[in-house]
Image (cartoon, rainbow, N blue to C red; front, side, top):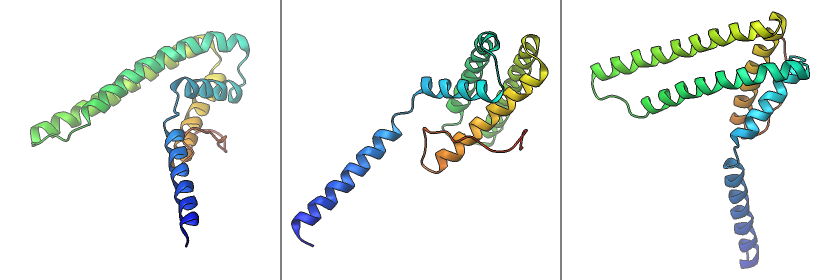
Length: 156
């Protein structure tokens, strides 16, 4: 291989790595939330009036959930060094999970006050599919794209 071919090969590899790194860093929470809202709106066939009533409450719920996720993430950074610490970490983890479920249940009740149960069901299914699709694509290296998931209802 001559120097020119080697230089072109190295330049191509460097550009590929640079492009991958830039794409990886382009995650935008705003874009993620907009994609989620668009997906839920489409999948649950929400009217503009329903969107206007639903998403402010939904965003409020998501903010509360994010606070819990942040606490979970902060707690789980370093493994405790002793049995008592591990026991506390497990109990804290369970408490966070229960709090997430309480938030979810509370907001599902609020959703049912403003939308028919069939729409709330469709929203919950769409949200679940969206997140599963994101994780599926993330595992394939497509971190910021979303393919429309297939199937009906929850597949837990």
